[in-house]
Image (cartoon, rainbow, N blue to C red; front, side, top):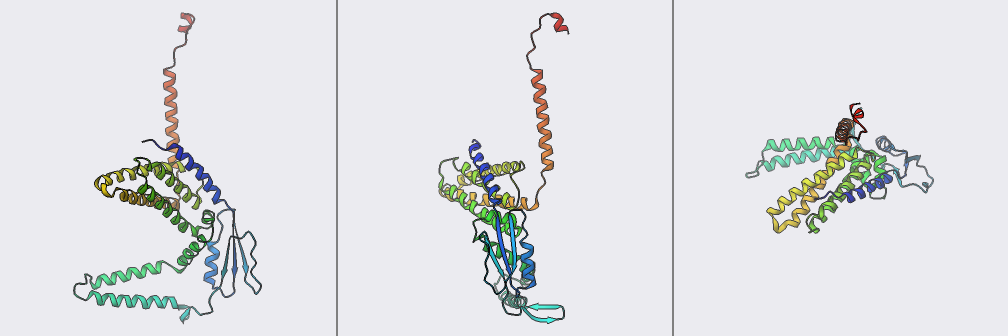
Length: 328
């Protein structure tokens, strides 16, 4: 099977287009009401720090006059707070908020109900298991702070209302995971349809490979990774991963020929999704390719020297005028 070079050329052109999208100017206007809590104001302030020169954030106090954002504004945020006291009980510096009290009541009721159900015959649960489950659930809720929930909700809200998803995610780090999830899901669904509908053997790989390489460039742009030579390693990994997925799909289709189209669709979607999650993990860690570059450079240098040596050894002997020239 041939590697789809023409498709890859289109993918690299797509990468340049994605890079252009990430450099698109974005403008955010934030209006801060006096009723907004300090937590809300600080969370939004820390989140809206542009990572590129193409992002501009304007912050103004919200007064009685009418809001009049500039015409180039993409998103307008008004930070205010309901006229209620979020603190239920206060003991000096220790405060118990209403949402915290609701958490306590909810977990207490869940724990009591779980232990009651576990004590009944045939439940399949033990009381110790219920205790462990509720404990870990509480830790998960505590770990998922209000700040995380606020920013995740805000990211989804903005992405639903703008056509500059790549530029927003490249500028504001809190939006990157939400944008990446959309890119990965879209590519996985596209390849699912390709796997289910393309019946010509071998014709699906170029199409899926193009979609996966395009996904790579979109994710790289979202995480602020430019179109650099290092992307070549990732493209090679994506192509190799696509070949592995294709081999697995063929093996599964042979075992289930009657539902082969469904198997192809599911493996294409699952493989593409897993590939996308791996790329997100890679870009979040910001892997250093300097060592790989050194190895590639050294290998290329050795191959070049070897080719030069072989070419010199096999060069035809020049014609000489006489024996004295040969002796010389």
